[in-house]
Image (cartoon, rainbow, N blue to C red; front, side, top):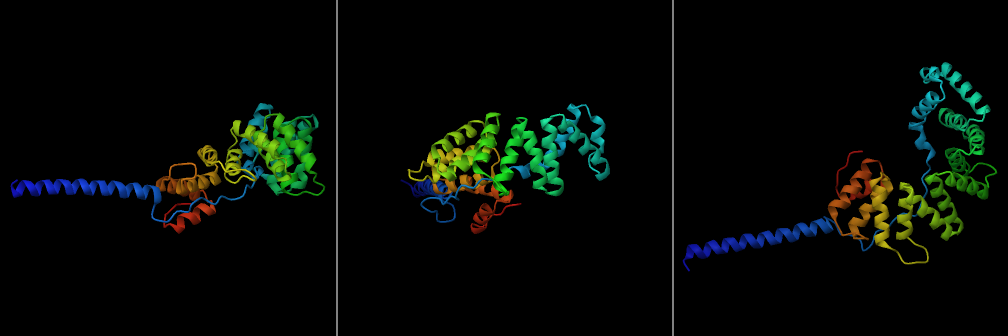
Length: 289
């Protein structure tokens, strides 16, 4: 074979070998990333996230919608300034006296967010709850349970939550399941959590993922845990984003992928999840809060 032809074939095979090597290295980087992964991820213990503070951003538009439905458009323009807002409060109190459950719930939320007075909010939530308002039952249970209010009784809290769940509240199912799990009634807790997952509650999905990842007295189910984390992360549950990133990092229930681990942890870090921020910082990954 002429030298020129021989050299040409050598160059071709060299290119092929370089391509194969690059493919292998890219695959390795995709799986492993620029760090040594652990054998299995370390997930946090299950911790319930209180919901009522999230209502702060929606209480005013929800109140406006309620006032319009109640035929009190005249009060909408008076929201936002202290003096006229007293008229709104007085109107809501009058509606609550006429057994309007929504009005009583809004009075509870206004007491909670205007002055941070949970003690003043509880009677309004209680009144609304007795009128079978699902959200009021849930908020009341959260306040009594999470705020550790004097005289709080777990059985009464669970009764409120189960009433709220029966009225259609998925978050109530989640909190009830969390409380039951703490007291050892795991079978009933698992059933309630599964019900909350089926009703689309993202916190329930995250907590269910932790249940499958960190089971007590049974073998872990990585595939089920990763699936729950994925469902919750896609619905915006920031803690699930970090947990899902750990699954991708270590191959826990999912195919190992450094790019996916980075993507989900960057998303969580940008939403101010501290463990995800530390994860990114340890690996030199930039994120924008």
